[in-house]
Structure formats: C-alpha cells, structure tokens
Amino acid sequence: MEKIRRSDEPVYWGLFGAGGMVVGMALPALLVLMLLQGLGVNCFHYFNVIANPFGALMVFCIIAGCLWHGLHRIYHSLHDLLIKPTPLHHYVLYWGALVLTVLAGVLVFGYCMIKNGILNLSFA
Image 1: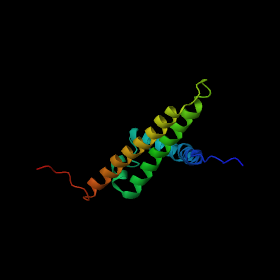
Image 2 (image 1 turned 120 degrees about the horizontal axis):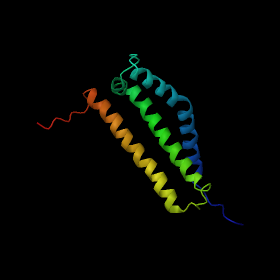
Image 3 (image 1 turned 90 degrees about the horizontal axis):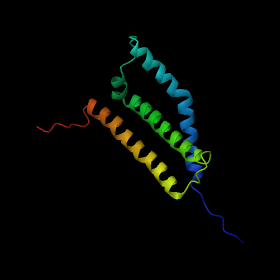
Image 4 (image 1 turned 30 degrees about the vertical axis):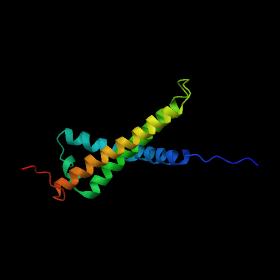
C-alpha cells in the first residue's frame, strides 16, 4: 500500500481565498475612502485609523490578505508563463509573503502602540 504524501497547499489556498475576499471587498472600499480624502472630503484620517487597535487590525488584514493573494497568484501564474515552479519559487514567494506580512504587522501595530503610549521610543 502506497503512503499518501501530505501537502501544505491547503494552507496557501486558504490564505489565497481570504486574500481574494479582502481584495474584492475591503480594498475597493478603502480605496474609495482614500480617494474621497484626497479630494478634500474629510472621511477619516489614515493615521487616526491605525491609532485605534481595531483599525490597525483592519488595515493589517487588508495588507496581509493582498500580499498572500498576490504572491500565491504569481506562483500559480508561472504555469501560464511556461515556467515550471520549483521549490525555490515556492520558498521565495511564500517566505517573501510571510516576511512582508510580519513587516507590515510590525509597522502597523508598532505605530498603534506608539500612538497609544504603550511603546515609548524616546532615546534621550
């Protein structure tokens, strides 16, 4: 009897699906609000949104979802470009998505903690 090999693809497809929902629903709404803000309508101030922990979580989820969705799509688009994906492609794209997601979390939540006085970066 042949042993079935486990795959990590369901995890990536789940993140791809969640990112697709974010790209399809939340990102357009955020872009419209940012466009209105740029036109002079005072909808919100971006940095005030990130200062609120719930707003920071929302912005982080949008950024992380877009990253995972985009990089997973690039990985599977290699077939369309007649490039056979190798483990190197797999590691570079998925680890890149992970590193960029962690960086986005550090920046967004770091700003939130600084703005709320939880984290103090005074060097004096």
